[in-house]
Length: 70
Image 1 (cartoon, rainbow, N blue to C red):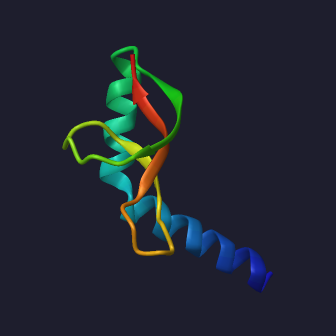
Image 2 (image 1 turned 180 degrees about the vertical axis):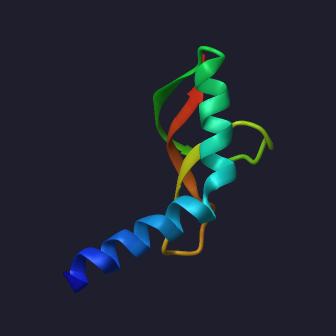
C-alpha cells in the first residue's frame, strides 16, 4: 500500500509541476499538430514549441528527439 501511495504522490507532483507544458501541448494538439520524431537534434529555445529534452551528462547542450509540430 505504501508503494502505491509513493507512486501516486510522485505522479501527482510531476503533473502539477509540468502543468504549463501539458496545457501548451494540449492546445497545439487541438490545433491539429502532432508529435514527430526528429532524431538527435540540439535544442534551441524558441519559446513556444514544446519538446522533450534529453539532458547531457557531459555538461553539453541538451538535445531533443521529439517535437510537436505540423
